[in-house]
Image 1 (tube, rainbow, N blue to C red):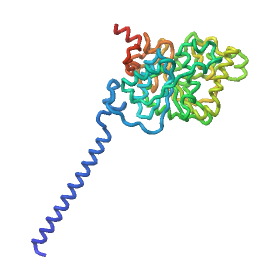
Image 2 (cartoon, one colour):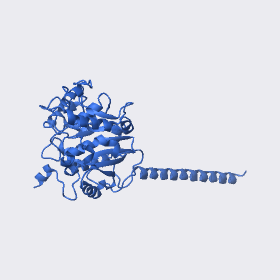
Image 3 (cartoon, one colour):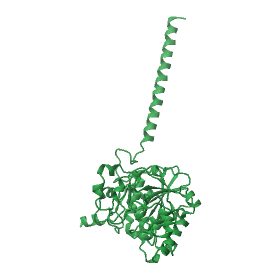
Length: 372
């Protein structure tokens, strides 16, 4: 082989090697651009992104797939702003496939639909369910038609399987909550075999500091039930057993139906009418006593940080540090002082999640007064 032919062969090999290198670099660049466009869809912000702001509505929505998380929440007309704030906090702090089951009465449905449709919550999956007052006929002391909707809707939690009949598991939330964690974590709470619900016990966290002064010992059973009554004595429950707050709980609805929990609750409501079984020191927590009886020693526990409560009592700002409140996964303003009312501890957190009513019918009292 002549020197000339050798040189030609070498040049051809060099050219082939060059083309291979260029081809590989082009493929790498293509893969890089694909991954960049997949990881950061234009116009989409997530709650965990550094540029996330709850004040800026999303321009587009990432499809939420996977197992549905049913969340049941009640919506009385006079507290509709609370429901919207709670829903907003749940939805924006999670990427889970959440479905809100909103239980309401009267003409609230149209107002709520308008509110949601004119905000970024229009993308939320929800069902509106009408609560029928007659369902508690003969189970409460007053004519259901004469009881205000706020108190009447508190009994909705007794009828969870009726509102989400196809679900095996669901979350119940009171309307006066703000969720700061991913609701998927709460939904994944492990319930022990044979347990139909998981609650947060009143003695298990800093929330136990929020005992109601002058209204009985309301972090245990004797604060809710009259242990002098024969029907309560026969249950052989310990009076000092730690109670729980049913404003937030996770329900195993398969087990709930298997044990006929709703029927058990109704039976104790009826017996209370006949025998006056609830504690005299009890305020308005008329839904708690039957739940305490039915779930005595038969419920699982949720993480205490998923139910930091008593924020609606006076002095809550002294009981909890700002750092603790910030770390909480869920905040509950149970008590007299609501964050949409005239005064409340940590109301600035609630304000961040509140979406003004586009119809102008609902105004937080505190802010409405300040704006005048």
